Image 1 (cartoon, rainbow over the protein chains, first blue to last red):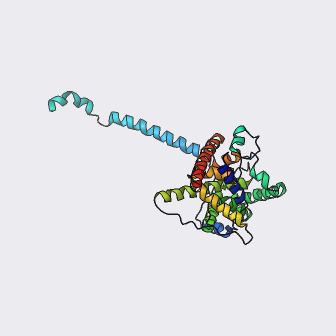
Image 2: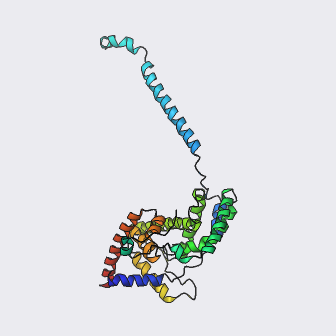
Image 3: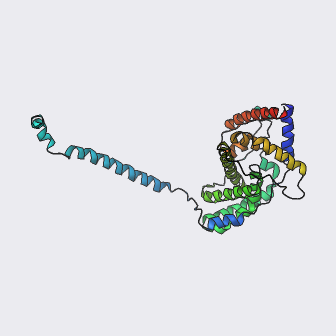
Length: 89
Length: 214
């Protein structure tokens, strides 16, 4: 340990003797809470989160399946026209 | 969060820090038990919707939180703002308090986060060329020891020359004499991280002290 560090530690020891100023924030905190500036976070309802996630996942799966099916049926004439497509062009 | 006492390791010895929790060194266990019981009742009331009861919690702990946050600022106005912010954040997340440690320790942890954020904001302002408007501290009362005030001014000025992370670890471990375990609890860092950070910060401070001595 260097001499400078030792002196710094001495200063910190002396600084610890300093008293912090008095604070009175009770009224200000109560006012902020009462004014509705803050809303307390309620504990997470995991059952609800799980149910919501399952619903979203199911909806996404149904959407993907519907999209794939729609891709196959959106143009029913495509199968008939494809052989003469070249001639028509 | 638990603040149990840990046996000193060689790194604790080498870093020159105490392994005994600061709370155990300073507070009366009987008073602490009474305060804990009162806290438990008040927390239950607040969570039941009686938010006015939170004022009792604020009144009970505001001075302890202020003493901790006085390490983060030298300006009385800023100190009040930081203490206020700590209690508002405490109210916001009171439902997540699991009573594994006294409420005061939990509030100190929030206070540390609030104070650290304040330093980071001040450092960013300095980088952008915005000067901090922090006012020099006035003595807390007429009886305040002038040597303590002078030493505190000097220590705070030196610590303010370091980046916020280094300043935080030195403030907690050396100025507040907190153990590695307590520092880890307050900062949310791992114990290894605290030791590494303390080693780096100490090196930087030694370099700074040498520069100042020239």
